[in-house]
Image (cartoon, rainbow, N blue to C red):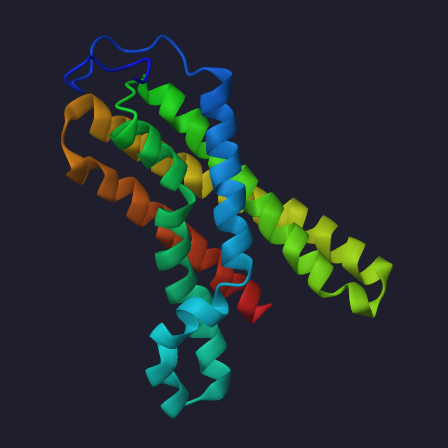
Length: 186
């Protein structure tokens, strides 16, 4: 039984702070989802398939700006949802926020590793440059947006109202999509 639940599955008292394992679960689940997302266009690009009818150039922008944020933002926080719903853990909102940040950092790191390895054929310099540039730009983006989602999970857990997760999650999607649009334009 998880440390935050009773024998009936109902939350008892809030856990003062997450344990080391909770931080590792958040980071690890974020990294796992980041690994899958790095190969994700083959999974979620078909959602933008109707755009191909009009423009092949527009297709990649629609995938990056609309589809990727809609898929990646909820997926980044799967570890947090497992802790909340399956383990019945109760933390303070700030703790959920930190767990969200770790999930996003794990996601961004692993996504960057996969992309850097994908261009290794062009040389180590290209691979390392891509890894460092994405590390400076996209890893913080994923950390920030997953922080918002973690905050939303904390609001949901504190209030019991799952709708309170939607506003931070939608804000994370808009931030992610805006970043990808800017990157596509530049």
